[in-house]
Length: 308
Image (cartoon, rainbow, N blue to C red; front, side, top):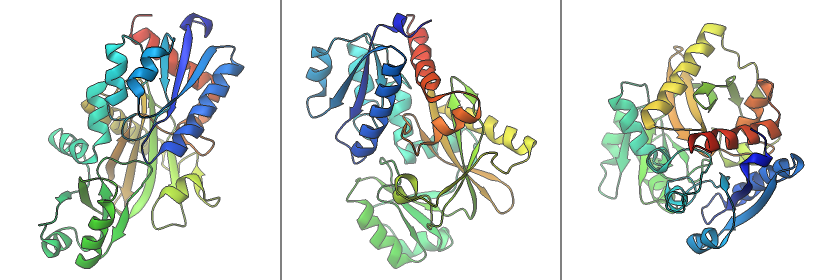
């Protein structure tokens, strides 16, 4: 399959979520790579009238470079399904599930996969009891935001309550998860195959928005520092974590390794970043794949899945 055989490609970017700026950068990088590859490509900045935008545009296949709600949660995937347009990444169900950290966690727990214990929070939560249950060491997260937006680490019930109110600015669904002390890793998966694992090191309290997109002192370790058996076990865990969610095409799993050496699944990303700071392109490069080759491969996988 050649890039020309894919027909006209639409790179969907921007969107209306809190991750809009990151998405614009991802989309621009993908668009430029496809242009350099000689593809027939257009870019569409998805705004408030996504259905009419996509209905009016002429294209054969979509590369989804949208992040967050409206682009990564099954919404745009549903529109493309109705338009009978192939697209990169997971379908409606897996996209919606993976976007929801709480329900992702419930599915992993039901499948017997390791993920830190957590509580869903609301105004009537027993802050003292939850703080005790989580060992006075937790992280509060909006359930349906990405890029670590709205997240705070907490150490007592007052911080827990205040961080819940802070997270509610971004999402009405908020969880508190037990903090895992140890090393942080991320595993990119393309078409069921795990790429080399990356270890993340940051001077920040955790790998937050600034550490991801703005800081110059964040370290990305490749090789990741695990021995061969440990890395293979982590890769297998990431693939299994994706499979139970029904993820297709590509994505990334974020994982912690505690001080005892055990791995804990944190979250799944079905439309990861494709910027100059992004992790999937970094892992692909370590596997011998250029950014351009990565973009084309994701489109080819999507086209093949839809019988093109």
